[in-house]
Length: 178
Image (cartoon, rainbow, N blue to C red):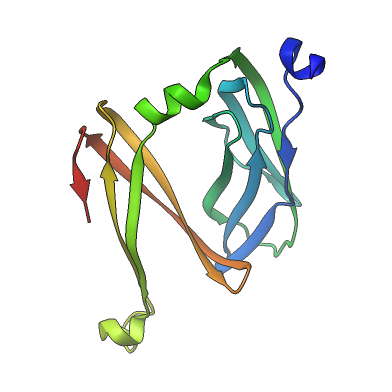
């Protein structure tokens, strides 16, 4: 208890998964968890180290008790590789003792009607093997957001088999999108 009160506990970092998406293209996904109730990462930088190089640096944040999947999509490599390591840098911790009450007011997104539509059902399987993920998302908070990045993961059982992101620009309070 004293450790968390004075200093944040370290992040819990899962094993990075490498998904081959097509010839010379890869997606990299790793789950990161903040086990702290009263601390959040206002910002941090991350990149992936791969067998033949490294990705560019990206910036993210992590709320108290939050699990988040960090991704690098469409990484190009002439060589096949099966593992990657994540590097986290410039961690800017902030104390937030009453985050649960703040979360109820600010961070209220509802997602429903999630559906995966395979390329065959879209009638595109012959020309293009492109499937589609559909979902509804509603901003139920009193706040407008200039950008909300949604990471969409496709599972087969408990295994992640696909990843993409969807950026929602100018997502207004009480707005719903499909």
